Length: 155
Image 1 (cartoon, rainbow, N blue to C red):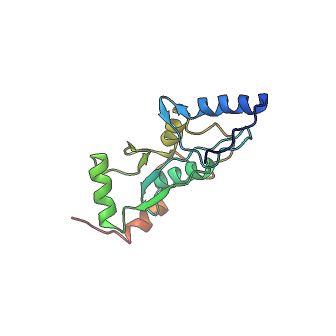
Image 2 (tube, one colour; image 1 turned 90 degrees about the horizontal axis):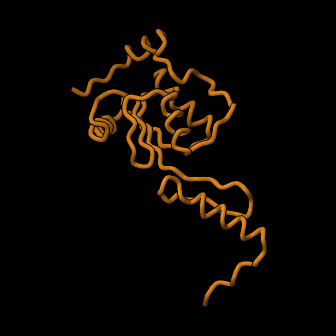
Image 3 (cartoon, rainbow, N blue to C red; image 1 turned 90 degrees about the vertical axis):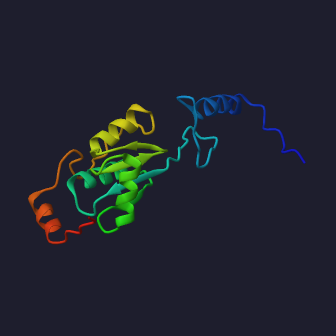
């Protein structure tokens, strides 16, 4: 049985035209969580962030994800050897953080650079929300001291 035809109203027609345009972002199809007749639609990105548990650069990436309310997988590369090996294999280099967004690997990147990538590719909209921590800063002396007491060597 075929679904019923949508109502033929100018509002609905206008919505469908906007929705169809929004579904194509640079020639790629976007996946929407719940398209509705509102003016807001939300894209779902698959984000894997290869991060250290305690690191200025990693915390900057986490802050950008929170700032834009993005769901992401926080992958611990310090306490799990397999995660670190996966990051190196995918990124082609050993430095972190690395963030994979819909299959695109951003290697050795700061939170600021992640945010610039998201904005320049229209994956998020600009917001005045505070990040809460520096998004382009290395580890503090305290963080370095903390990591030195818990060093895990994979090699």
